[in-house]
Image 1: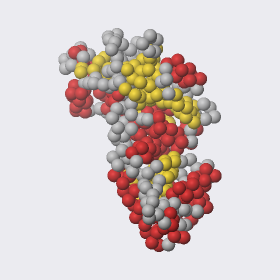
Image 2 (image 1 turned 90 degrees about the horizontal axis):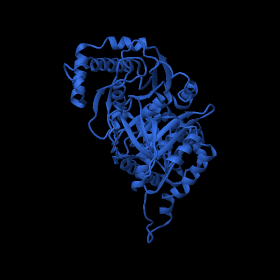
Image 3 (image 1 turned 135 degrees about the horizontal axis):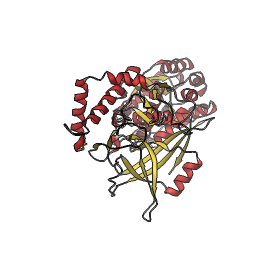
Image 4 (image 1 turned 60 degrees about the horizontal axis):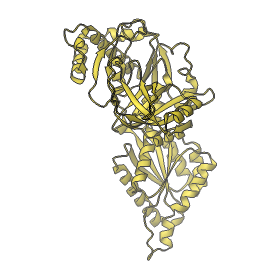
Amino acid sequence: MKTEINKYELWFLTGSQHLYGDDTLRQVESNSLEISTYLESQSDIIITIKFKAVLTSAESIHKMIKDANHNDNCIGIICWMHTFSPAKMWINGLKILHKPLLHLHTQFSRDIPWSTIDMNFMNLNQSAHGGREFGFICNRMQIKRKVVVGHWTDSVIIQKISNWSRAALGWADSQQMKIARFGDNMREVAVTEGNKVSAQIQFGYSVNGFGLGDLVEHIKLASDTAISELVTAYEDMYILMPSLLKNGTQRSSLIEAAKIEIGMRSFLEAGGFTAFTTTFENLHGLTQLPGLAVQRLMSAGYGFAAEGDWKIAALVRTMKCMAAGLPGGNSFMEDYTYHFSNDGDSVLGAHMLEICPSISNKQVRCEVHPLRIGGKEDPVRLIFNAAHGPALNASMIDGGDHFRLLVNEVEAQTIDYQMPKLPVARVLWKPLPNLHTATEAWITAGGAHHTCYSQNISTEILQDFAEIASVEIVVIR
């Protein structure tokens, strides 16, 4: 499953005024087109940047922002004040703005031409002046926005625009996200609960529950041909344990796992869902808890969380969207157990079954083992160690009267230990700045045990997303 990135656009709007005359405005338009074209050409910016107009009146600004609001392909606007643009002209437009806003505070000319500078140059290159006027009105109106300052060719500016564009992409996807809950929350667990109505108001996505019977009907429709093709794909992609090979004693478990994957994918596609949850306490009609199916669906771009935790399922989906095209992966995760050691305390992250293979460091194994929970047959799952390197854990918490996004930067370690009796996917990380400080802060902030573990989403992207979503963010690093 892929996010339709190619259809999305960021609209580049330039502010000016009629006071300078037509010649200057033609130059403003030419410079704006050159900047937007340059930004569009940068491979780090994955969303199309489209120059729209030089805006010189309240009426044109209001119409442009109204058009942006109603254009499904526009996921945000970039505003640049080339010259001075009286900010009262922007009030009515900004009042109705519903798309993310980035204020690019740049100047067309990098250097001052010391020997030739005159008032014509000064009047044309007034970003230092006009940007402050625009910044004032945004602040006065409490408009949420990202402010990026520097010359438009600087790599650091490109990276900041790229990060924000990814946050805008995640926000756009969240507005149309539908989350299917197969079964309810894990019984008596507090953190997986939450107010779904408040979440839809805050983030845009909808969350609805479905009985296992609805899913089972899709599983029953899996054809022999589709099952055979999927099992062959398993054989090609993974290292199957001997008992799962053709004529193996547990081959039927692999076939059943394929049926579940086909059925789940069919259900999600039919309903337009991009995220889902399961729980081992609601398995009526299933022969095994979905493991392999969930892992592969996550790898295909679906958001997921176990035990009915729809907030984390939504976050996983959002972070997968924001990471489009980046190396590394994003996965549902859980802090499972600690390793207190003289060479540095660390956390072993894992789950019973459902860790996304997008974070693995090499080809993964496909095996079947007892679960001893859920009361069903032994489930098939993918087993691997995660790649080492910088990463982060992010969790969305429902605090009752507000949502809080909690982020902890970590350093994933190379796993040098053999764990033959722990047949699950896993990652070993050192929280930053250290386990004691990070964990104390996490618990004090009410952090959940479910997270999205990311190898490619930066803290800045999540900060940009939190700003767009008007949600509190706490960063531990």
